Image (tube, rainbow, N blue to C red; front, side, top):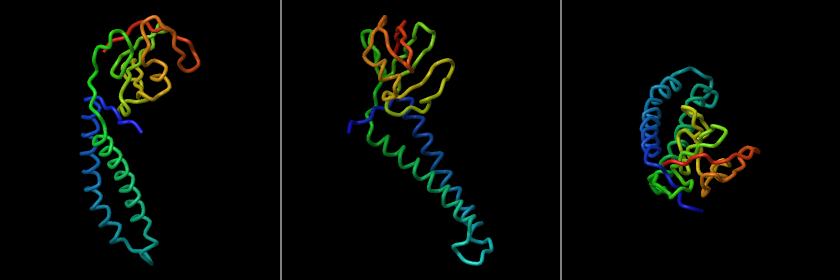
Length: 152
């Protein structure tokens, strides 16, 4: 298993989300209190309690995943790579599509923001682009494209 890479901006987003999740979990206290005070024939028939518990489990799982990511990742700053695509590169193709290559986790992965497709470094698009230079042909989503420019 490799050590994950994380860009500084994504680390800030992850830390912000951790704070949000901690607050969401804390705020569930009121919902738990309400669920316990609702009448039900037996303790195991309390579906409001189960719904709150499920929500807490989802928040806790995401919280654990993000804490582990931050703890185990290497912070990597985008840098000039002498004309090759690397983590933190913005790549423009001749079909006018642009891809930003993030680290192992990026908050915007799989989304198109301001005309730029954000991908993590192990996505199929990033795998096709990493290490390539301007003018090289890459296959993305079954289509061959030529790299027009690379910037960091």
